[in-house]
Length: 323
Image (cartoon, rainbow, N blue to C red):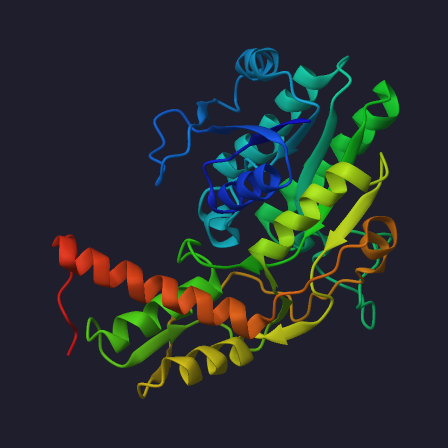
């Protein structure tokens, strides 16, 4: 089987290419033109804004299944750069669907649990049939991409499976995401690179967090066993508060950390609780989350400790200590 991972240069893309290769796939993956990728992965440059470039990649790689990961995936950035978010997530999605039209290629479109948005009281855990009421720009663009996928699947009999992925984290993730951000700050404190204080935003929001290594296994299984035209929640099925995440990070850091609210980290709008019903993906593929949240946090904290030590040894760390 041949697989093409669009957006393979990103955090999830690296894990997905490894997951697919480990299960016997011949994997090709794309990255942004000029994107610098760590490690020795060979990636094909692709401008998702060009249908012609996508068609050329499809012709070159001849995949049996395409995983579409390419996205502007930061909620915070989507408030600051709404046009960029729409161009990548909506127009890029249309370009891919148009390039795939008429081809017998299974496609897994990756959406987000953020699509549910302003959730009705007592609606959690959220089934895939719950109405979508996006609460931020990123969520709106992912909901639009998903609706387009459904339209193309019905109108052109295309083999499309759609995932609504809830928060996922793990070693190597950008600090733009909460677990990675807390772990990096804790690692900096432990190494004496900043004052013993973690800057935080809203600690009351409750979210579902899954390890990225579990999530990419879900994507592989959706490519293999997901039912065409269907939407699947991908998550642990149990929400925790951001405050609980922070408490776990501080306990693992074990170096005396205080907490300070940073107004710049507060979003223009925040949804109190997002928690999925994940029974559908379990029923159709057998997938469920296996890696504990504590292991995800511990591995991410270790990643940042090692990264910062290596950075210091190379002389790349340009910041000053805050002590």
